[in-house]
Image 1 (tube, helix red, strand yellow):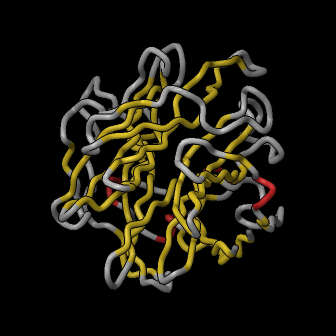
Image 2: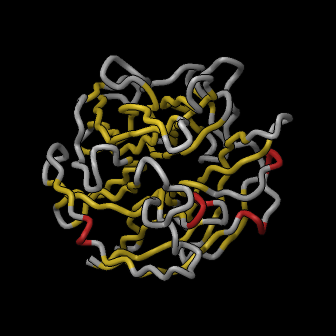
Length: 315
């Protein structure tokens, strides 16, 4: 397949975002309405200690990807002290469920021995996605005996009245060259009858390409031409921040049954120019169908600090 790049379509620096947020529009994820689309993303403010907090915002666009407006309200509140989403939500995946919109949030909080931990929460909107209320202060999917930390990046679809969630979980921490811990995480799968109570599959579903410490993130799945297609991003565990060869790239796998996935990144024809906004990094993909076309939203350099772009998928 070919990914026809349509360029960067949103830059957070052009707007005064709610909650004193600046820069960063990470993990763009779309919901389609009759006459426009809404793209949610995670942006950042700095707290009184000059540390980041992640907030959810959105931008409304025409179906030709022209900007209409950005969110004016707080979309979803961060968690109270000690909760799993105290320090931020990144990312947030949205799904229409009857007359409501479900949002699967990755809430994160700072740790002492390592930098962060995460779990998946659920919030529901009754106002067409303008704001969301959490179903509770705790997560719906969290670390467990075989998935000990960093559960997040949920992407949910409903097929044949079964909710399917693809997500990531932390496998281990390893030390980098400065003796600081870096995370290793993989993609997994869970199912649910109601979208609230989940049953984990408890196994790796995407084979490694780089090495056993490959980090896999942001799975996004779509059914097209009787096949399920998954786009995700992957990187080295160490050296990825400043070395383009070790940074995030877009990966691909396909399945006939939502159980067994065959990885083949080489099927993606993604033209990369080192001087472009995405020349050093391509990450956090989100695939969707609109007007009989397949598109993929994604972030570029510096983990989406300067916006997100769009590509058309051509088989």
